[in-house]
Image (cartoon, helix red, strand yellow):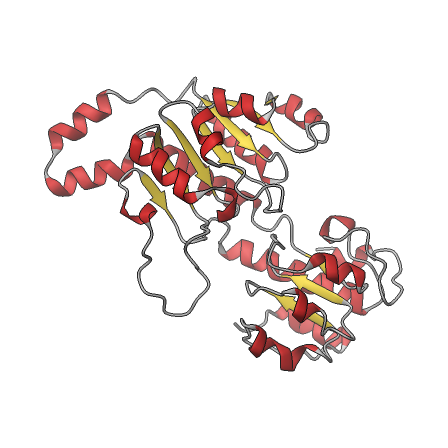
Length: 337
């Protein structure tokens, strides 16, 4: 992808000489790591054995949000900053979540198939049994950057909104201002007609939604996951969908389908075979503007560190890191639009 005029200006100003390498496996990555001063990561994993080779590196700049594929703890021990672009696709994610919610609430996947099959009577019969959207409840698991935007959009359709997060006090004031009720996870699962997962993947959140959690959800509820596939036990989800306990699911990220491979065969996964799901291949955060924002933030994080400054605190993943090269406080001019 050609670099933007913005990036070209930064390269000239700070004498950056980037080396772009397509390297998705340890074998491909190893020859390029030892002497790099900074490293951009898009979707490839950066495991501990790779981070161990970063002898000069000052920065790992993730061109995106999630850093679960990066050995952040080891980078911290080695004094390497790990940064990301935490807000680049908030609007896109919120739009995608609402699109999935609306499509599943109106049974659009089924209705399209009924139309193609000429099953018009069945489509009408099932539509007559649909509940009105206004007055139903959306539960948001993870009330960070995207949660408030999803809440605003959901409330425009008359939905009541619940939310939960690890630190309940952190988002309480904003939740109150938006009319969002903060509750614990069990309460959210029991009361919600729709559950949207909007939280990072960590050892604590892996398979947060397992068979036990799915059983707590309302019969006929809908699950939406646009965050990380491994937040959900996919085998348990398939069973809940097949049994009819859940009415549907909208899934954009998968544990059992590898999205970032070249020329993959059609996925062989039980979720693909179900007719009550909306599936998209990890595209919920994408748009022209989101790509520009992501690139701009990643490059600015790089320029900040290489010019001797910390990036803004919200862009630093390992906030407790002691940089191997001392860094001054953030320079606001580097992040001014």
